[in-house]
Image (cartoon, rainbow, N blue to C red):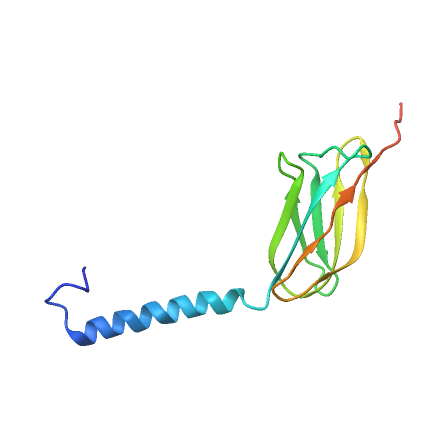
Length: 124
């Protein structure tokens, strides 16, 4: 149904515009007050590590989010509640590395770059 044609009443047009503004404002408010964490995962030589598992744990809630680094070794977590987090990165052949007390603040992106260390080789 086209609300902008000549047969639509002014009240219908007004209602549609108010509904559109309300939906847009609600979406904007839902993202206000959030932060982000992003970074780069590398190996000891500084080379990127694609496919590394990255976990973000919220200290206050105990909720964990998971991601995998891109082909460029990058990861990002968005729309996070402000607070303290732990970022952990792991990859087969490397030791897991955790960075504790990562602060997420409103409308800011915290950068946490992680350098993985080669893991011990074991034989059975």
